[in-house]
Image 1 (cartoon, rainbow, N blue to C red):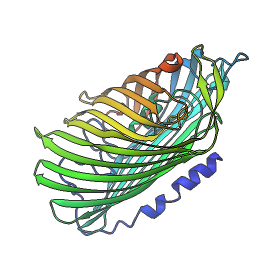
Image 2 (cartoon, rainbow, N blue to C red):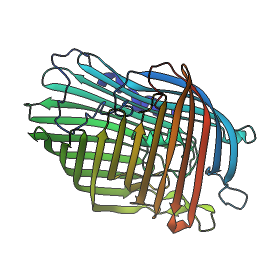
Image 3 (cartoon, rainbow, N blue to C red):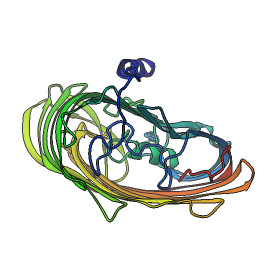
Image 4 (cartoon, one colour):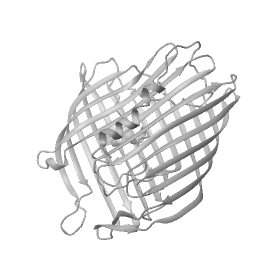
Length: 443
């Protein structure tokens, strides 16, 4: 699929979902305790605070180790690039904007990395997450959430931002050009101060430039009901239907879940969802898919068409979040059935994440985060991939509007059935420029 056509098809619906901002009531806490809106949520918050839209730019020195593009040598073995030194130009924006009856949240990070000695591995990385919440009347609220990424590297600050924004499906094994996008719109009907109903729809796509990886697109429909039990506790139930298609295969998924949302000890919020998903996978054509051998070689193998298979899988999510005056901390877990990671057609995706951001010292911002993710194949080829890693970063205001920025990322990729594993690292150090009276909060 042409990349430009891919983006046009996916995002043409966005203007239709951004309804007029005319409204007749306030946006405050319309879903009850512990529930983030499916539009803005906490998007654009930094270190426990809502901040106005802020733009920044800068330059970095970059050191990358063990890049893994999906290219092979004359013997068919994967080529690994051990050490690269380069520079990057960076742009970003984060924060939010409030109208009387609407709220916008934004998080964007992008760079272009240049390796003078190995220009083959130059590339751009972009990650965008956008949320909009509009209270159209006292009983109707509209939400829009858009996330997308264009990546040439699977590890680094931009890839981490794309994962946090919901663009990626499971661990990305290769540092090869890929595009991801997700658009979701929903409407919430507020029956009473205690009860609300939400109906939504969305579309997503994963596009890989390499013809050896499996691109796919999908759409989903969802409905949920939520009821406030008290000032600090709410319960709910949800249903989602999703359909995914790719060359020669399809997957239909129905998910049912119960939900709990709560606040405790003033600043802690918790959300828990648990249920079951029914997956119906159908491979209608014989497919040529890459298989990694124990010696690191990559070969294309034929996987014949298979009859449809149906299976039930437990699914769910949980998040614990703490907002301080100048810091925020969160821990989350998610298990879902959906798109694969390019190597697999469809998979059971499981992930966990934790992070802390602190801006309590006048000129400093500190951040640290960790991630774990697996994708278990539901179709062909069989197998399971695992990724874990994390990053830490700091910014320091050395002069007015001028900030020192440093970050270190590490990621470990494992494909046990193929004997494949690698450790990759990236370190950056540079200068960022941004106006504002508080420290630049990138991490």
